Length: 321
Image (cartoon, rainbow, N blue to C red; front, side, top):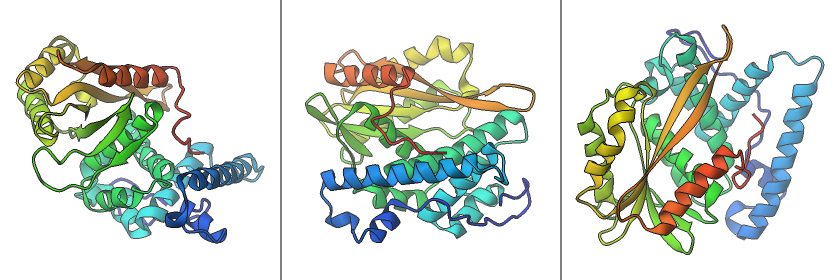
């Protein structure tokens, strides 16, 4: 189980949720041999099975853990099933010692910071659960295994978010060429749009230059002559009067000399105290359209946030933890 902050603990697998691939093997199927329709059918059966199993555990009269602790243990299990128990021990249980996750998971002792840390661990598990049936999932896993988790986790976030408002989302392999190194593309109305995800670390201080440089770097990754969509996660610590007063103008300056970015979706995860002992994390979006933003990109952004605000995220799989 998870050790205390600053000490080495060991993850212990409970083995409560099989992966989608394990489920298919039990049914004598191989994911690569299935059509998209067959994958959808099998996923429906798998998801229903997992939900029923977890519900029985939650409702058991002799359940040994609180619901919150159970959800955390289920999350650790899902992460270990996809990334390995050693990865969980190095980067989750002992995140304070990990260069890969230290600045993303180990945030501090305050209840709000602990809530954000636990939220990020569970969100990582949720994305692994939600995206595991897609043909590009293995390439996404490779990035999570080796990269700093802040950026890799947000890319998974964006892939999941786009499922809410787009019928078709694909990832792209990193090739290191200007104009061809964006993260993904999504169908918006009748057009495939390149999409890039950027995440600023929590330790990054607010400055206009930081935002401008990040946005311009993203613009160079989009194809010349095309128009893309940028998702940008910013630190909660940036939220305040100065951000509200300057942010739109800064984005306008950052995109003034490029036609490659049509819109910017800014994402903020903000922790809140519920009681003296409990806290939660809510996600907020800020939409910015350039003066030449194509209608299909702007309508996608508006539809995404409208569906999110209405709680209509059923187009993307909903995990049971």
